[in-house]
Length: 136
Image 1 (tube, rainbow, N blue to C red):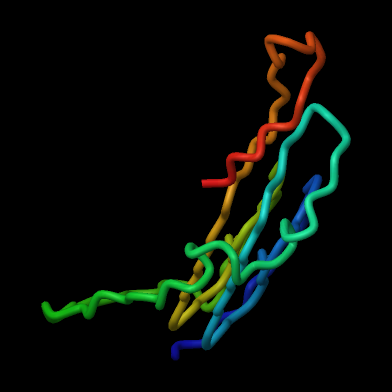
Image 2: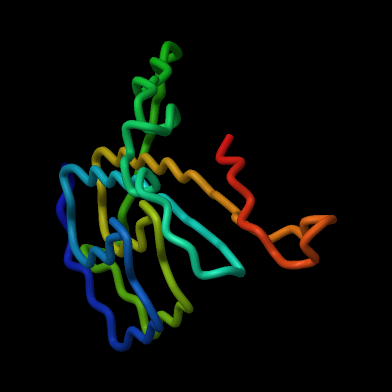
């Protein structure tokens, strides 16, 4: 890996969370994995099996990475040994993402998210909200 100096004068960001990376300088490998269970509800109610990842198929699927079969030829001319950034402003990076200033040889990012919305529905005979138990 060709090495250069990375110089950043200023970085401003609000958030960097959930398997995200802010990398300044050269990196050989970046491998980020996030598995997220996002539950939205409008009625306070606890389900006993909700936090068990094994009940959701999306987290059990094997990872599939397609092979790169065609040759890739790159000719790079770096006229300066310096990567210089004056100012970098970002709002946020989340769920397996990368903000990188510098060279990176290999990046592999994986994110699996299961969204569940448990919204109340009005029971016709009772006239009061009841939790929706559909989790598919």
